[in-house]
Image 1 (cartoon, rainbow, N blue to C red):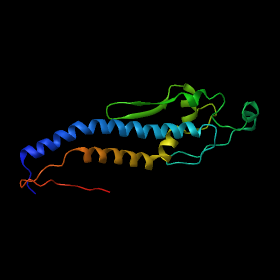
Image 2: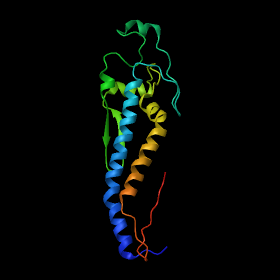
Image 3: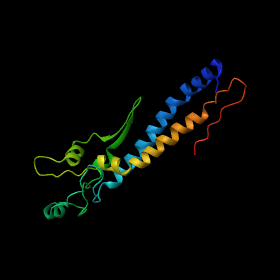
Amino acid sequence: MDFTLDSMAAFLTEMAVHMPMAEHNALAAAAQVVETEAKAEIGHYQGAAGPFAAWAPLKPETIAQKANGDTPLLETGEMRDSIGTVIQEHEAYVGSDDDKAVWQELGTSRGIPPRSFLGGAAARKSGEVRDIIGREMHAALVKAEAPQFANGARQVIDIP
């Protein structure tokens, strides 16, 4: 397979144009999936996911104090509503700026057991995240114009 220098340069230029936006779109879509899952977990017991243990049941005295009863991590919805996403150049972060979120995610020395809603959500959605990133990057590669062989024919790569 012989490519001309011009056709290869054109192909690589097209990729350079499409790939950064594809990466941003992939990260944003994948992070949104994890954010949505993390928010949905609040108020409902979660099983083990990846390295994250299943949530311990609330103590009866805790349930008695809660306005909503046996709804782990949910009282006012403030912590759930604090979950958000930040997209940077090559990274996406899903997290919360609420101190209580850290205490709940990791547990405390004062007896709060870890109830991972961020890490657990990421673990549960890892397959979907992988698929989203793969689709976005593949779409960007397909958008880049295929290089021509020295005889003028175009190389076509069809990836299902």
